Image 1 (cartoon, rainbow, N blue to C red):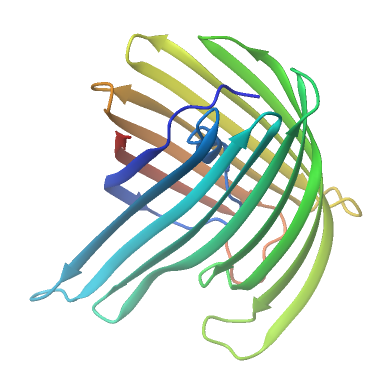
Image 2 (cartoon, rainbow, N blue to C red):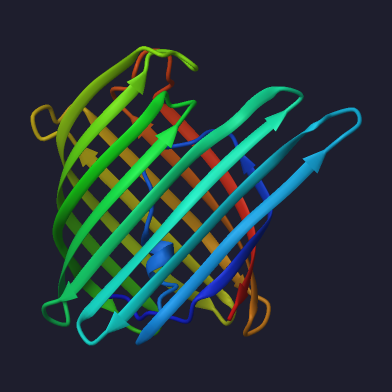
Length: 256
């Protein structure tokens, strides 16, 4: 498992979302948990507009974790909302909880549950539960490489159109695999990348892929900035939803 670090408080100063995806990369939250004891983290922004444009943009995330001996657990919840001049831009939320039990230095076992909603993906609610091993392929002070493999059961309730009262229910059993790496390029500059692949076990052509990569620039021991790029692909979206999404995110981070 990666070496846990102190929790941090993250305040994004620039966030330019072009889309919203339904998968969630949990690796950044894992790194916020202290090596032992309890951790808490919070991030959020709020912008209010009046005059030529009126409305609000808000996003927030709150989470907590605990690490003790061979046990690691963390959970977080997030809400993103944007409405300008009566036009809805973003409306999504998710809740995720994960537990890891360290079996050996190289192998741990994970279990997780999650619930999501996303108006523009037409996801009224997505509930899932999964479990599987996590492998530490390599880990030292400068480079870490990790592989996760899990079985995941999923239950989706879709709106047929935005604002529709007609729902469509479907379920799936998926494999959820991810490869995550982090590296220190030089003093004060780190890079991180994670890619998830989630094929349907009954129809492997039905697959979802999420990739997130970025850089962290340390300004001081307590302040850093970061930039990351996120891409999401769904080979079988509901009618009216595009298969590919991208997102560019910039943030400033306070570490406590």
